[in-house]
Length: 87
Image (tube, rainbow, N blue to C red; front, side, top):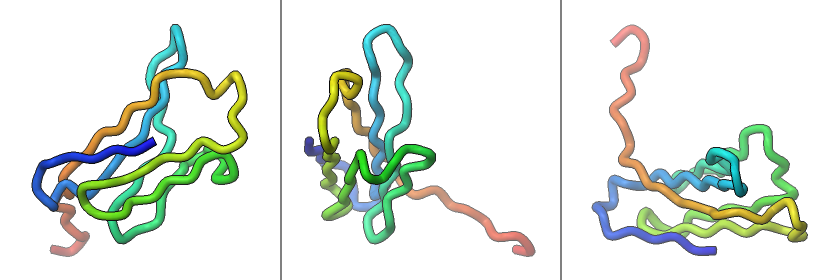
């Protein structure tokens, strides 16, 4: 599934969530343009996320099973100003 936005290029972070019926949303993967996807504790063999540009990304769920059913959401965020220790 694909996700795109028309905000400025600074919104280069993308989050994919899944919400199963009767449950709250859970984070599937975090991606950032130019970086590696972070699947957290979820198996990378189950999901594949790509971030082709600041404005576009895609999520693939592999080997679909009944337990993969739900609504999938994407959200974007602008990179925050992180200050390093000692600054």
